[in-house]
Amino acid sequence: MRVRFAPSPTGHLHIGGARTALFNYLLARKHKGTFILRIEDTDEDRSTAESTKSIFESMLWLGLNWDEGAMPDGMEKGSCGPYVQSVREAQGIYRKYADQLLREGKAFLCYCSPEELDESRKKALVEKRDPLYDGRCRSLTEDQRKAFEAQGRKPVARFLMSKEGSVGWTDLVHKEMKFENKVLSDFVMLKASGYPTYNFACVVDDHLMEITHVVRGDDHISNTPLQLHLYAALGWKAPELGHLSMILGPDGTRLSKRHGAASVGEYRRQGYLPETMKNYLALLGWSNPESQQLFKKGELEEKFDLKGCQKSPAIFDPVKLDWMNGEYIRLLPKEDFLALALPFVKESGLDISAGRVPLIDIVALEQEKCKLLAELPAKVEFFFKDPVYSPEAVAKTLKNPEVPQVIKGIKEVYSALPEFKEAPIEAATRAFAKSGGLKAGQVFHPVRVALSGRSDGPTLFRMIEYLGKEESLKRLDKALTLI
Ligand code: GLU
Image 1: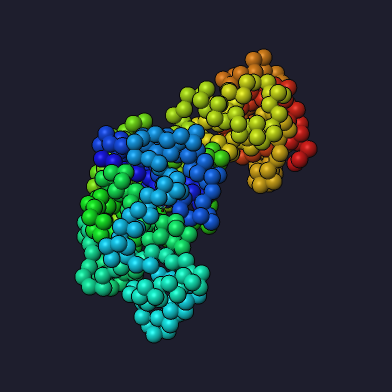
Image 2: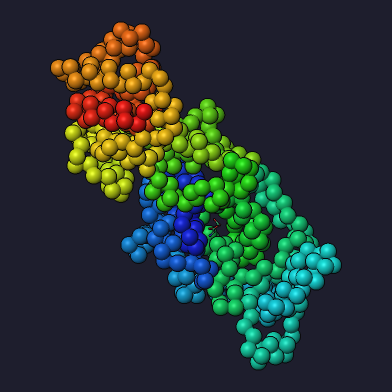
């Protein structure tokens, strides 16, 4: 099995592209095949080197290592290269096959200007016809061609599409697919610049790179009949073809920027782990018979199959993504969690030198509940500087009538504690509540808000131990002034 991911470097790697890359990678691993990365930079205006670099980075971050293709250091791996289409174009690879089709009368040169094409399209729409190319250059005479060239017109090469019959394939995901040829256009193979179009370059390269299975997003279904015509015209066997279901946002419309972060790099910056993204993306349009949700390292590579790919759209659910990230964060050894958290803490500008307790212990306190690394600095900040009192927490908890007495009382209890450690702090706090006839929550909640400024946070008595006696007493006093 030889599969490929063939991104167009016109932007960052997005969720849809990453899912396509992952499924191809998993297929290759499962079947001990080869995963190839080909850069499809035939859009001369929109392709950039930065996009290629960013796609490489995102793929490596996700752990989608490829066996052949363009490499980040500018070199290539594999014997079917070059793997960058602009480089292949410069070597005349596409022109060679376009010339062959022109010679064989399976393609023709078209001299129509963009304006002329536009006009004919509009006319077709007014006449309620499909706005297909009207075929006006299909049978130009030698003289007509020369006349156009004398006008300085540069031709494109178009495929001569049959108007009869149909084309079909058994899709690996969607099963039987069929298109009538009369709805297909004499599509452009080579542009006036000599650059190939996506459809043409894709077929030439998939063939020359010996791709056995093409797995891509279902936005390419309409390209597939054109590509199958090219395979037939060139006398090549087409690969197996599978089109992955569309990804929708939670509101049921196609996933886009509107639904939040869209690129893999943005998810990375927000503190999602690569393991989370890989696991989450795998479930966008695929499931195993057990509907397993979490996969151990290496498990997807064993369990993935095309049979589990569904054709109905997949829904991108950010709540599930956050849940899954929390699951993966909890699995981390605390040293690894610290290492991942550190850049986020540094970036936030938080001065951690004032802390009494090492950062690793403080972040470990938060690890249990953390869903996103980017949230961490705000969560641990109160250990290192005066708390910022949340107005809601103050209004909801500190304004209760018994609170001033509770705070004053607990302050006395804490200042008398010989050992300021989690267990004695807890015992003393509970005893204080009991002796005053208060429910535990009537003491715990105000103490938490008084010390951290927030009504949620890490396990309370460990938190108090880490703040230390002196700081805790100071904050209890401060809280009294807020009431
Ligand atoms: N360059 C195309 C894209 O990014 C590749 C489509 C394909 O896999 O054939 O959508």
